Length: 330
Length: 198
Image 1 (tube, rainbow over the protein chains, first blue to last red):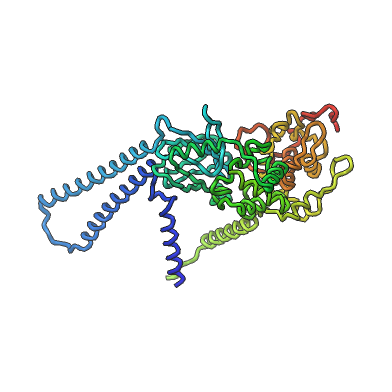
Image 2 (spheres, rainbow over the protein chains, first blue to last red; image 1 turned 30 degrees about the horizontal axis):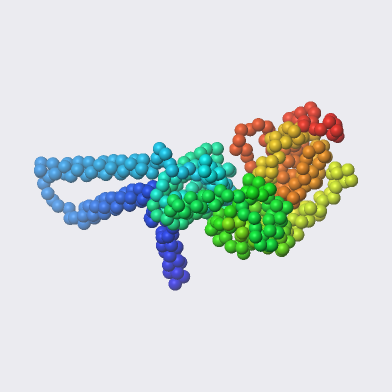
């Protein structure tokens, strides 16, 4: 009974893992589609070969030994069968190799990408930097990458501390982020949506809580988002949030976090200029709500033990105000 | 037919079991990491008492109750090393050999080598340019950083070491030993008022 439940749970978990917005079997981006075709093709081919080999083996085991005089003809037939099987094997393996070469070429970076984004992984979050242009200053955000649909996006992958790996199964293959190096990866979404990614290289205590969202939007929506992100933080309207701003700047918060347009220019933590507009906080740990913001600020080491955000002593009023301020930073 | 159990087999099995037990014991003894200091304990760390001249003093009782973790514990030293880079210490103190600010590696401690002096220097600042970090770091972080700074210029090597450097090595490692022979003849980056022998 218990075993059955465990199996059912396990199957359920596997089924959940294979659907939705984080699955290599549900690709929504050109590179992921190429990879899926390759893997499905190879698996199908190998299944056919395996069935044929097993059938031949079964037939050989099943067959009675026949007392037969070996003739010239039977010898020739045997030679031909073995030669044909060998040739087929060579052709199949060479074919799969060539197919994988073509896939590798197809998922490689094009000569010119529409957009280049720098992604720097740290223990345990993702720093996302959009370079500025003549029309718009550059900006930084965290744990959330917005891309325009149907365009080639080059992601430059860097790391601040240890080796991490960027993997958004629905959009592209895996690529490591190695300290002291810059790797790149082609990201492309064919359909608008929110695709979840996860650090895919064990990187320390909170490796499992290092998620990243890729949000693919229509180009017009993307431009609107980028313009709003490149703006400085708004002045808070409510009294709570205004008091929170003062407290935020007076407390150690400002030494690690940047809120553009204020005196807070710390760089060791995520940029909080538009933290209220992000879907999650703490690298996909919890949804962004005023409650979760307050919980995170009050006790980050209980929610995500070992992360580098210290527990800053705050009064309950300060906590309320700062969480209101964070929520207001849309 | 009875199979003889050879002595070498017994010895091999005994050695394997001994290695297994020893590694299990070592794993069990691994240094626990204090990731979340209880708020009262953390605020207790603020209660150090300095001598009137600001040099040396007594750490708070809670520091001894915790087992002096910030001087001896590899995790805290590693966090201190992170903070050293994050809070801009290299801007004045360089890689530990000084610059605009005093060197830690030369073994000249202007306010003494005790951790309380270093904590007070970071928390409250010192004359001639050392800013106070009271409002920029939590007291736990200040202790972590102080432990790391002390390690750079320790007279005797510490058993625990912080994380390794990924960058080019520009100075002796923090856990080198003996440290004394590496020390310079005089203090580096010291304000004239502080004199060669403070």
